[in-house]
Every structure is written in C-alpha cells, then in structure tokens.
Image (tube, rainbow, N blue to C red; front, side):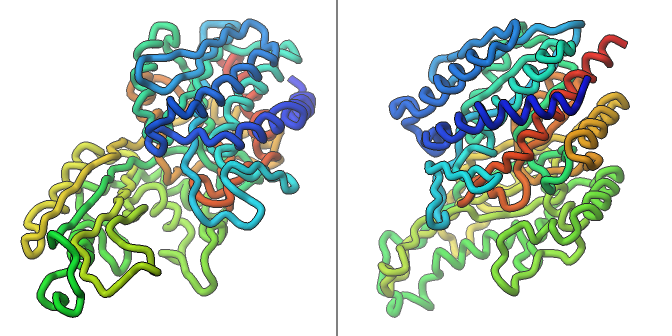
Length: 471
C-alpha cells in the first residue's frame, strides 16, 4: 500500500465531493427526535437520508449494497454492506441527526448557515457527525482504487444518536443476522485532543438525568409579603442539588456514582497530559481570569473521563430578566445531566439519584423528578497487538506523529450496546471533535484537514485488518 497515494486520493475526494455535500447537509435542520418531536412531519431527516444515499450511490464503491431500513414509528437507518476478502467483518458507525440550534453563534455564523473559513467548515452537524458517512466510504474506495484487499465492511448511519440512540437497539436486533459478528468496530463519533495526531478513545462516560421540579405555592405572590415566610423554590433546589454535588469543588461523592480508575487509564491520562499540557483546559472559551477545576492537566483528564460530574443544562419557571418582577415564584425546575464513569452501573446510579432528590423534601415542598437519560458508559477492551501497531503506523503516516489514547467525557450509548453484543470485537473509536470545535454549542466546526487524515487512517487500518485476518 502506498500511503501517499491513499492520502492524495482522500484529499481529492474530500475537496471535490465530501465538503460540498456537507455544506448542503448543514443547511438542513434535521434535529434529533428529542429536540424535534415532529421530525417525521417536518421531513428534514428524510431530506438528509435522500441526500446521503444519493451521494453514496454515486461513489461507485465496488460491490456496495445500500438500503434505507425503516421500522414503524422509528427514525430511519442507512445500512450498507460491502463484501470483501476473507472471513472478517468490520462495522463502521456514524449518525446523521443533529443537536438543536443553541444561542451564542458569532456574527456571520449560524447552526444552519454553512461557512467555510480557511480549513474550517462552520455549522451544526458537520463534525458531529455528518462527516462519518463520507469518511467511511472514501476510506473503502481509496483501497479499491489501489486494488488493496479489505474485509467485509458494514456501515451503519443512524438518525437517533443525539436522543440516546433509543431506536438503534431495535435495528441492531432486526439486522442481527445480516450484520453477523464483526471482529472490528470503527466508530467515528468521538473526539481528538488536538489536530496533530490520531486520537483513540479508550472509554466513554455514562449519563443519567432528567427534570427536577420544586413547587411551593399554588401561584406566585408578592416577594415582600412572602419572603422570609415561604421558602423559595430555588433555595430548595439548591438544597437538593447539595445532596448530589459539593458546591465548593464539584465533587459527586456518593459511592453509587463512583468507580475505581484502572491503572492503565491513569497512565494513559498522564501521557495524554504530557502531549496536551494546558491545552486540556485552554481549548475551552474561558472568560478572562477564570481557572479550571484543577491545576494538573492529568487530573482534569481523569475528571472528564473517569469521575462523575453534574451539569445543569436548562431551567424552567424563571422569567426573562426584563420580565422579572418582585414575585416569589410558585415553582422552579432544572434539567439535570449527571455524567458517570465508564464502568458505573447506570441503573443503580439512576435509582440513587432519584432517591437523593426525592426523599424527605425540604419544608415538605412538592418535589418531582422525571428521568429522561439512563445510558451506561463504555470501557474499551485491551487492543490486540496488530491493531495497536496499525493505529500507530497510520497516525505516523498521515499525521507525522504517534497515536494517543485517552477517554472521552461524552456518551455514545451505541458503544456500550455493541460491547455487550460483540464481546470479542476490537474497537477503534475516534473522531474530529478537537479544540474549539464546540459540538452541541455555538460556532461548531469541522476541521477539514483532520477529517481527511482520519479518513486515510481508517483506510490503512482496514487494510491491516484484512492482513491480520489472513494470518
């Protein structure tokens, strides 16, 4: 295999075909069902499916069979099967649904407004995770152009990932016989610590959460009349949150939310911290004078990947500042997101979270908690020698630097599911979400050079997987 030829082919196809398609894709507000319950009536998801399948069919990938699989009442799934040499099977995964708009986009940018600035493509969904279908097929086609054999490749692009992949288990079961038992899973929905080398995700956190609501009155009343007599709903929320998180340092100490961090992952965190240094935290848009939660980069990596952390992602019952009169409000509500360590039992954690929030309500207030997330994490099996060597070689060939291994703070429910279904499989979890790319937030962008290099790396790994299978 000529890795330089692979690189040139990938670069050409990305510039001529993938980037223009992603520009059109970004224009479509195909929000995940959790954020657009009327997704089917709006038709945006179908629009993307039609666009992506049309592009795939134009690539002339030899032997490719493509089908849009539809189960009643569920988002569609793009299923592709490309025969290869040997007995092995590689499963490549991505998704096409998007997070909602989010406020705060800088002037000239917007979630559905694709903007090319230098080597960055701004807009919602390009990096998370619209690029994945293009990377998957271009990597396969790059090998075919050189007549380099690869194993059978199954490509799955779902449309429900940002809603917790609630539809995906039904598709995996429905397609089980057709998928078979992959011995390598390549997931392109993860992140990278920088844009200088290939990053391999070793773990993903779980997630539990929901809507916490506190009601103290039948209706709002004059704050001067009631304050000091009626405990405010917001203060009661603070008391409830203190049962979960220490306000002074953010620690979530209940044993149900914590696990012992494996020695290997601590060592890898130290190595990743040596590569990244302060970029572990400077990649975030801190306001002037703001400091991270810990001065040690390795501890920040472990906080982000192996320790529980609470975030409040939304609020209800609070009027806009311009409309906030002197009223002691009847109720307050918060959207709670609690990230869990990769090996934490999400069911047990969810039950404990509910207990902590609901037991013995302060002042006898009316407290309700409606769960909406309950996703387990994922911990990668140890890499086989051939895969570790292939990953490092690909990173050196395409990036000029060795690969780095690190956990991710996000959740990909699909990975835990696959880990259970295919316990003997190897996993290469990677992605393009690097510093300042800001998935889910304003000013999200795809770093195009990284997408190109990652695609070439996938091609190299596919080729080495076939060699390994033959030996």
